[in-house]
Amino acid sequence: MTATQEAWDRAAEVAPFSNSTEGEAWMEAWCYQCSNDGCGVGKDNPQCPLLTVAYSGRTPAEWFDQTQPGQPPRLGDQYHCLMFRRRGDEGGREPRPVPDPPGQLTLLPREPYTGVRMPLMSPERTEVSA
Image (cartoon, rainbow, N blue to C red; front, side, top):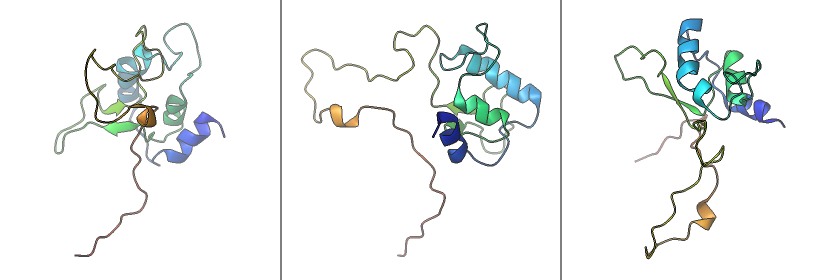
């Protein structure tokens, strides 16, 4: 299964933006600054599977809504993308943990917890009886 298909399967069945102005403002603030996307650096086609899903009219699960209740969304800052990596960062595309300071004691080793971690919304609501 391709990364685009996996992102499509996780995405919400609602359009992320109500018009092209909102979408373009958000992509200018996020996608065009991200190392995961080819747009804005001489490439015509998006390289990020999340952007491909958004172009198809679905909201990727990796985009968290940042709007405040009762207030309209800010143009270009409606969502927070978990996969965002700023162009030119030394870390590259993959997230890396901050190294432990010299002489710092640790309670738990990091190795079992390394990798991309992302919360996924459960499709079903679980009821807890008192």
